Image (tube, rainbow, N blue to C red; front, side, top):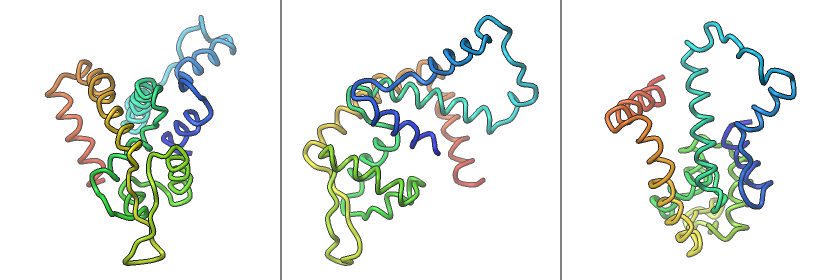
Amino acid sequence: MTVSKAAEKTAEKTSEKPADPAKGRKDAAESQGQGAAEALQLGGLSEQLGYVLKRAQLKVFENFLRCMASLQLTPAQFSVLLLVEKNPGRNQTEIASTLGILRPNFVAMLDNLESRDLCARIRSTNDRRSHILVLTDKGKAVLARAKKLVATKHEARLNDLLGQSNREALIAMLSKIANEF
């Protein structure tokens, strides 16, 4: 299960605020008697780029979910709404492929977004087997609020932590991995 799918399930299960995954890990460690014990030694794991990237992704997603709790949007759902807004008339296969979301997972996510009246699937006039995606008026309003929250809370926190030049360098390095690896 991907982190975005896990985050989506968490957000769907809670009607208010998504659970704090960090707290759950802390509680689990304490229940196993490790709360007061010395932290585990990671050995070479802390030098593995994949491990460090995954840990950073988890922290970023946890913060995103906290920032979006009032809108109940996961990172994947936010990404879908953004792409639909910027690419009107594109079909669901193109959106899913761009985001790297498997078809069954994407269909379930669209079902959720449609049930909340945030987007709609419309049969394509060019290819009746295909559906294009559009934002509803409510979806446009929710996305506008989400973009403000992301900018003022989520991205602002990352910018404060990293600084502008480190942020730009990190985006460049991660883009290189995503595009060339």
